[in-house]
Image (cartoon, rainbow, N blue to C red):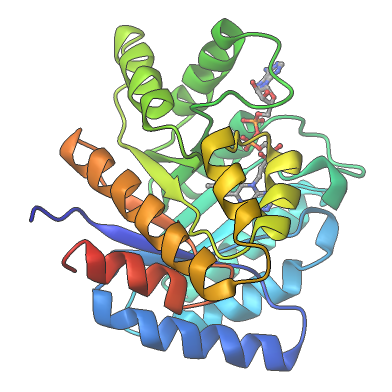
Length: 275
Ligand code: FAD
């Protein structure tokens, strides 16, 4: 079976126990030889220090790390100081985002991720490989597909090297988005974000926030499983494995797993895929 590069995303830990659990998960997933791992960022400072500490700790391992970065309520000086720390720690990747509104966008002078990408490029030149977010099912705040793609193109032109998508369960949404980007000469790798399915309640909550579509046929079956967690995991693994296989077969340049700091859900899918 053909394989593509993979990466794992971890959520910034808020406690010492959570930080230790993150490192254990990363250790278990390292057997799959990820290209890099990333750590989310709480805009507004809610987990900023957790992100930095986790990124510096992960930076001690053999796998490259990509801290997520957003401006939140931070001043340009604060962001600049953080970039310098990352450079000093030999970190060469970033995932640059506007950040969730609910995490707080406070007093920042920036309003869109493109401005952050430009800022990082102005401050650090080509030091960082920068990934940005993409939305095959369209960002909830976008007024149209056209505006989504226009602003995505601006963000790429600001200096992004790659994009990672919001998760989705409709492969056609991804392939259509790729076609639309190609038609607009947007030519960077757009890596699908993969969310393993382990419970319906959490998945619904996340999907409501980020605007990911949960197909009815999938939800109906998950509802029928009730509290049977083994059945949910088995079904979820099968659905997401098939999705990944279809994406690989259709030419996706990689797979980025949203681990939520758990190793087993991603590991089950990767084993099915022959990794
Ligand atoms: P933008 O690219 O700024 O886009 C946001 C909206 O503004 C879109 O609708 C866009 O079309 C529109 N827009 C862009 N430019 C303009 C303009 N010039 N004028 C008018 N409208 C414009 N959130 C976190 O808080 N922390 C994380 O660590 C995190 N990691 C993520 C990782 C990935 C891979 C993804 C896909 C999302 C992640 N998010 C994270 C969520 C992300 O912050 C939210 O989806 C946020 O709402 C948008 O971020 P963005 O970087 O895509 O913003």
